[in-house]
Image (cartoon, rainbow, N blue to C red):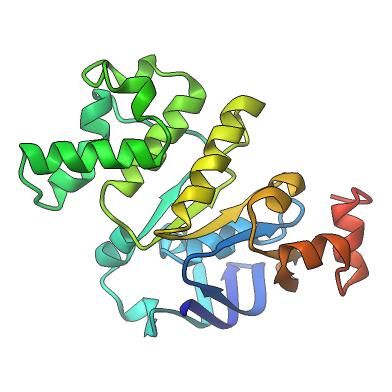
Length: 248
């Protein structure tokens, strides 16, 4: 099932042409990894999917991006962002307890307290591979967690509002290898319930977790294919050169 259908997507910020005529599909329950050098349009593309680019000055978009068959520009933006959550490169916990960080979204959407809220928080923390580490300290400040734990807390906070898609913008860029492995383990488990789109500068991470991989260069989608095909026999020499570290 197609979750996102992107057709001839073109994005400019004033004179900067960030994304150029990109067409692709994102499927339900897959991990799509997006790779490419800096300034290749990866993050701009990702932020299109939940309309975060709308907040930027001089933003202009042509072409279309449809979510479950509906043009995202015609959707209520708050509803879109509830259904399409994002995890950023740097963990940004709220200045609240661990529990209240995860409970924040459900409360904002009207979920009452009590057992239902506790169950939602517990399920989100378990899905983010964090529950066993924090179950006895839920009322401590989130700032007492390590960097890797804070990132998994932010994943749990996103999961708690029960989205359909999770966008990851280089979520492991500041993490050590052990924390990175835990985030990747969580992603592989999460795809059973969600669609994941991961922008990463770590090509080996893309190889480890991606079902399909898209390679961007200078705002263009050079190619998209199954991850093993991209890494063993890409169609475009530029893709092979990037993966092998010849530029980027």
